[in-house]
Amino acid sequence: MGTSVPWIRMLLEFAVAALLVVVLLRFGNPLRAIHLYEGDYLASFLLILGIALLPLHWESLREQFSQRKSGLLAALVGALTLFLLFSAWLELPLYESWLTPAKWLRFPFLFLAFLPYHIAEEICLGPSENKSTRLRFAAGLSLRAVAWAALALGVMYLHSGEILMVLLLPYFVLLHLLQRRGMDLVRQETGSAAAAAVFGAILLAGFCLVIFPVT
Image (cartoon, rainbow, N blue to C red; front, side, top):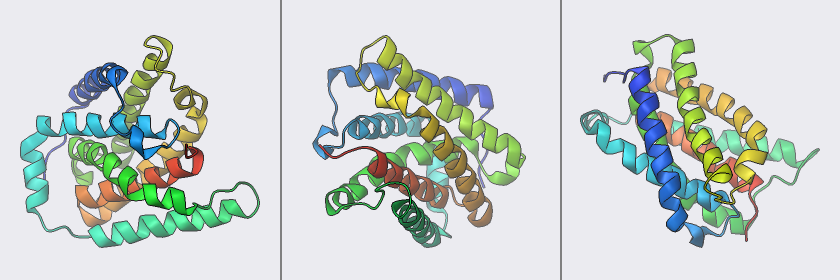
């Protein structure tokens, strides 16, 4: 159920909202208390961006939450399992990716901060049957691209100082490719925007806790 938002309208909404959030964050970072170096800025950015976008699609949001949350638990368990397996695999040969207790304490806060954005993204993209798999995948990535462009502009022109958002771009590109594809599969199998959003928010929260140090 639900309809997709036209691609141009989506891009404009995400681009304008992202730029406004970057400007707003110059006056303070509401999630600085998480003490995750530059990860707290990203969490604040996506939280405010998601909260700003959701009212623009209030009817779709109400419709989504009036439905039965099929697949929600499976998406949550699947995302956690995938993250743990991937962390364990990286921990052995390459990188200290297993989360410490201090980082696990921050996990639920990051997950909740990332959730509104992922819900907004899924609502805008609409049900998986509304467009081809490739078009939906490309549309989702384009929304991430305009959001990340706003972060980069904040570094270059507003001197936000969040340089890791630019330096770690190759890693985030790889994450977004895999995460977005996973979210599309969850949406296709469950038909639930909430399930896909939970899946994506968990993966992004875990990734951020791996790459951003605790301060």
